Image 1 (cartoon, one colour):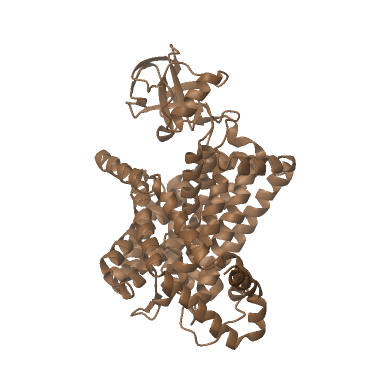
Image 2 (cartoon, rainbow, N blue to C red):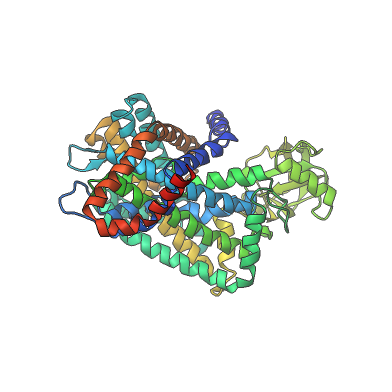
Length: 576
């Protein structure tokens, strides 16, 4: 299994974790933004009217309303990425990472508009009378690339477990145990039953539940975030300044944070942006394909609102909470995670500017440094090292007050073997003071507001609702992919297996599945981006046809919605 995990790490390093992937993702969004003349700006007002049902007609085929489809898609995107993902991006890339999350969302609004429109256009009615759509259908029915559609569908099923089910309940269970002392398998058991009751009822029950959960969970989280932001209102302007001034230069060192280059801030911001709003991944179009509409473009416009709500509103609130509270550069006593920890030769200090610069170069992939991973033995007595010829880096900061233990509860005495900066013995644990990341960082930030320490419960409740709703939505994405691959009869076995995996992951190590999902996400995203680019002319024609038809049927409304569009076209004509 270790070899397989290393193979997945290698695949991720040349795919999602590569230098070129963020440029492809942003590049496609930028292309369609220019090609379609900034639809995320011009059609935003119209999208708000469509989602309220203003232009709905009776008799349209579909299973859900525009709002229910939007809520289902949002429940899939508004998840742990909004709580832990933003914190992870800032902990690695600094404040500048938030800027690139915004850019991913802004251009992602257009990408989602395109992918949802095309997927809705080529949706089909299944044997059980429900609608099924998604990128696999336009790949098959329009591009005649069945092999690509099958690849996408398989990746969607894998991602439904690795993104929507297993890590979600794992995060929920850990959060409930840390905050309320509830055993993980108890949390898993209760939520598995609730999950089964929801998803076994199909898309109509899923849509009914998510359309209620999403507004409630968003309201609770926004109130908690504003309580911190308003409490630290004097730090908001400096926080925004740090985001914009460091966007193209990288984030400077601050407190325990050793700094991040432009490449790190850009890569982490774009990757976390994709993980948060899923624009270009091809998942949300599966939910929107269920919407009652005879015009695919109208549903595409509804999807413009998704990245705006998910990233530009909710992720921004999380980012401002973390930055304004100051916890992102503050060290806390925490358990060191092996994946975020490296042991280096020699003693390094944050107070020594030269050593700090060397560590900056090392952590950001530079070459102008002499930093070397530690290899050798560390003698430990009662949890403390007897020598100081090493430095532990954790979460891109220098670890302090280091204690060695067996698991988390018992101090260790003996020899600790280290090879190439990593602990050899898996039973050895390390605890100390360092920067923290992910949901832990967000939790710390929420305690720095009007609610004080009680703010941590908002994060726990938010994490519970966000993650559970994500699991609900991704079960639907997976079962539509199963319908494409094996037909309607495969849906029920898939749902049973999905719920069983959900329960198992509440107390199991899901690292391998998460690595598999990281690769699967890219296998979903790249074919989808490739497909929508090939259909760029059809997309443009579809938009033009939509407005021509809309103008005939809704002249008064069209004159208002198209006003800004006409001005844009006049400027283009004048420039030509």
